[in-house]
Length: 542
Ligand SMILES: NC(=O)c1ccc[n+]([C@@H]2O[C@H](COP(=O)([O-])OP(=O)(O)OC[C@H]3O[C@@H](n4cnc5c(N)ncnc54)[C@H](O)[C@@H]3O)[C@@H](O)[C@H]2O)c1
Ligand SMILES: N[C@@H](CCC=O)C(=O)O
Image (cartoon, rainbow, N blue to C red; front, side, top):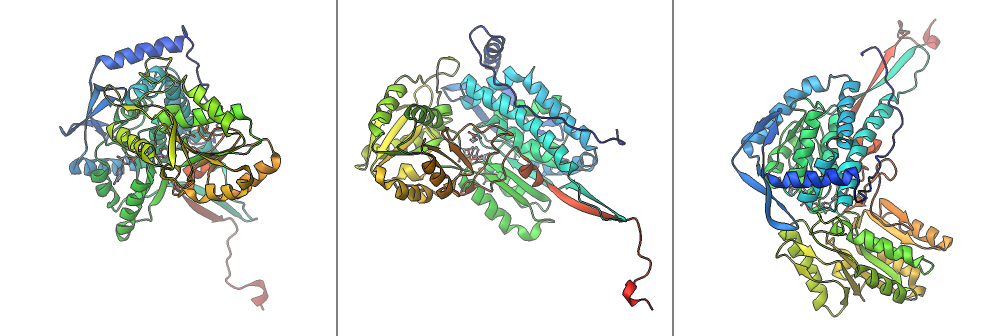
């Protein structure tokens, strides 16, 4: 329908299903888990819609059952990267001309599939591949992914509807062109939804994409890719190229047609990519857009007026859900001395009840961490605290990688507000508490602000409104997502646009208009309806 302007109506977040015993969703999920484990999948690259096999293989294992291989995947090398760029640029010709309604319809269809017939399979894949409990998979690979797809469609409609004013005798229009070239989407292991959004947000704007998923999330990312194909994504619009980040990154970032990087992952890798782009700057046809959402050292700051039960529940959920492997995870806390004894007692009492184990047992609150490297890093931080005379382990601290990469939920208390585990991102189930004297409240806010280089999420707990106002004002720049009397995790698409600044990234707010605008290059078109036919001004006329 070329001669129409379609409206995309309101947006509602996908409902989080509760998986009660005996429920339909629980039975479907159990069946999907069983069926996925029965085969060892062989995952090809997908370039121009065709399966490509290189024979250079990686493997996908289950984090909580680390001898169990669920897939082997082919890794891209130089030839495949070249092929993927060529196929993307070929697909671009038709894709960018396709009327936006047809483009958007594909992603709305993908959301519908993810909400219905694909829900159990993608959630099961996320549980096995990334070690998520059913509820953590549900909020990620079902709800957040569906929300990203639907909300982006809605935002496209709103952006395209924004048109400039026109003075009498002229007609001004804004055309929201896709970028010239291709976009490189590079995703982290920890959210299936983020991988989907990194690849599809530029594509919904009319761009073509090379998608390199994390080696620890190839399995679930491949399922997402198959879902997009079923939804009707044309060949070559997104090309799926798992493999080594360094090898693929170096080749892609030095290509003249690189138009943008859509990245989520560690700060260190984003810095490497940015430097790589800077070194290649003279080659590019256009300045590439660099969008990167990176690490965090997220905090909970309590005032002595805080509701202690709410504080404790948020510390536990914020620090230990998905084993602390969220960029938003609470990993440092500032607690006033006057309430610490009660906070500590309740924290220890509740953490003792946390069940850690195989995520297929729906009674477990936590599973294993993603891989051996992460296990070793997290254990290293815990060992460091155990050996320090500035810290003590309040609860937890044991690690066991014999069956899966299990780390107990761990609370460290330190006497040094700049202790290593108060500063560095750990990305595991470890939170460090600094107990401050109540009268030092204002000084400690300043310390909280400058302790870590990151600026992603932060949560404050207080009932005193002056304290809330003070914290909100003083901590303006150290969190892009700031929570009052809530945990610092669990942002919802359309409700709390997500992202942070400082070392946490470019803060382009994933799943929002701000992000989508980065994948568009607007063209302003002025048409004169009443042409000037004489160069002279009226005052020049004799
Ligand atoms: N701010 C956010 O929204 C957000 C969300 C999720 C995760 N994260 C961050 O991601 C990190 C955890 O994820 P991870 O362990 O998968 O991150 P990572 O940095 O190890 O990897 C991210 C991606 O970069 C790729 N990569 C590695 N080297 C590369 C190179 N030289 N060139 C191009 N690509 C390269 C990896 O293969 C992977 O696909 C944490 O730091 C976390 O805070 C941030
Ligand atoms: N958006 C997610 C975190 C994504 C990073 O890992 C949250 O708000 O918890």
